[in-house]
Image (tube, rainbow, N blue to C red; front, side, top):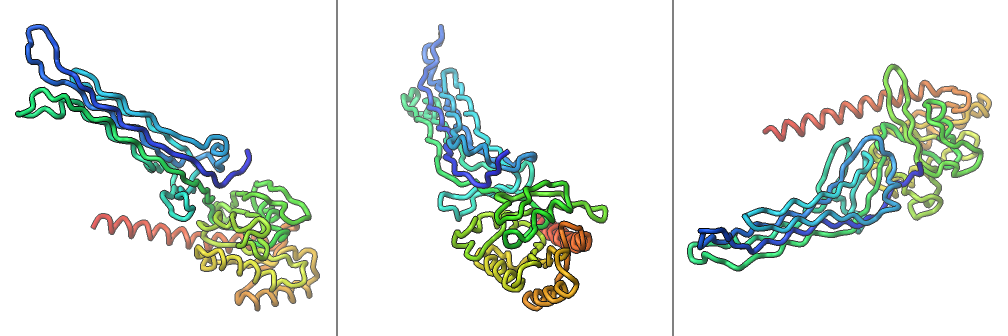
Amino acid sequence: MKFLDQAKVYLRSGDGGAGCMSFRREKFIEFGGPDGGNGGRGGDVVIEAVSGLNTLIDYRYQQHFKAKRGGHGSGRDRTGAHGADTVLRVPVGTQVLDDDQETVLADLTRPGQRVVLLPGGDGGFGNAHYKSSTNRAPRQVSPGWPGAERWVWLRLKLIADAGLLGLPNAGKSTFLAACSRARPKIADYPFTTLSPNLGVVTVGGDEFVLADIPGLIEGAHEGHGLGDRFLGHIERTGVLLHLVDGTQDDVAGAYHIIRGELAAYGQALTDKVEVIGLNKCDALDAEEVAAKAGALAEAAGRPVMTLSGVSGQGVEAVLHVLLAHIRDARAAADAAIMDTDEEGDD
């Protein structure tokens, strides 16, 4: 299935049904009075997060979604039927943005979460609604209220516990394949990965989801290379694994390029916990590994882990460090939810 992480769609909720003008006409009842029913409410436009989906590809081929109109009222005080709702089913992690692509209308982070994006129009009143002590036979009805319409953007941000960062050809896909059952495309040229990949990693009796995004280059926030579009997929992660290719000459420069792109992108990515790994150490001798690890640690101001996704050297140790940070992030998230629930009870 082809991966698509954003789509623009047109939404329109249903119009309300019109009210009915009717009078009761039965044998032996001379003055039956008004009995026109009200119109039914128009259908809503609802978005729902469902498990089992990981792409928005369905919305490339259909961009217009309209809910049904409410039924018209009828005699004998019968109200029109409610218009059928239109439900957009999207992957967990989807955000709904206004046409400006900045205003967030909904953020679906849990399976089964539903949000009414556009409510349907109210039904019109029948003439029975206008009956009063001074107007016993009203001939007034009202049409249904029109539904709402708007263009919105659907943007998918994958739900993952940890994210992989690095320049193109840093070995991110190789690392993902080495520690999970994911099988991303691996080749010896830049931008082999063109869309995000997810893998489930099992370590220490626990599991977490690792996300691999296409490599960044200098100027990505300005649209160079593949741009920073895929950085949104690591916004929800608890920890970042920054891989640096140990076979290149300037490992410190490579590290600063990625950190600069994160700062330019914003969204607090620079504040996330970062684990730094010097990759491809199987291609270096011990002196080169020590020298480049030292240079990278000095540039980053923190310890550097050495590893090789090809040979498996140091991979297990990196996974244990990632898992420790993920557990801390999960505990903090659970505590925040408990605090929110307690405030709600108060």
